[in-house]
Image 1 (tube, rainbow, N blue to C red):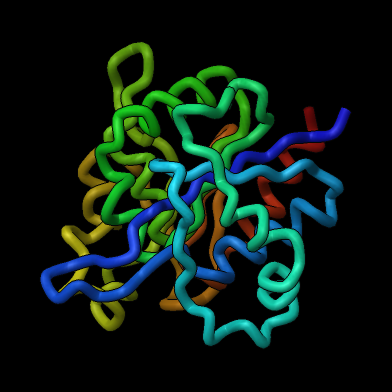
Image 2 (image 1 turned 60 degrees about the horizontal axis):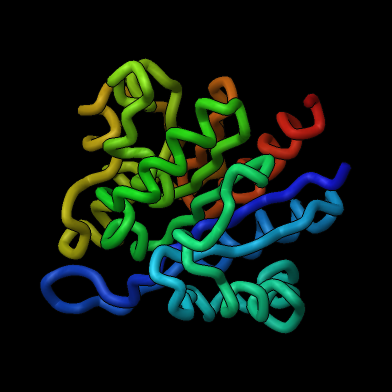
Length: 224
């Protein structure tokens, strides 16, 4: 049976005290989309509000997978993303949260998103996130009352990377926040690809890690 993937994206388009324009980071959507598509999976999009989501890093459109996403079915499908509350997430084999600065605005405390991640994780479907996307994993409590990420091997955009990228714009440093909720944080050098699997949870450090996250998610899905 064809595997089904739900990519859950942010609706934010500005962040920080100076209103820095942002969105979902193009390669963190396009590269996983390409891998899932090559695996012949069915890919759908949902956003938190159901409004058309925004893309950041359009200057990277010369990358083959990024360009294919923009001019092919990917971006057209993303623009029609359903409102998360109207999606039967239980029918999907995996959910994936891409980064960009946008998720730092609307994903840290979104109640429905927290419930969906909890339910997806506890039914042993695959949960993936990359770069700033793992902010979605913050404040997710499992049925036993513990934080999902407590004691889990996790990666995300690092404090060192944020220092030279958007420290003045983000509400908090993601690496610190994940660690404070008990995550066992893993990383490599700034802007180098790094992704890690812990059970049915897959996370990656930065834009260069998006393909690796998708590949690890596919490996889990094919093992079922």
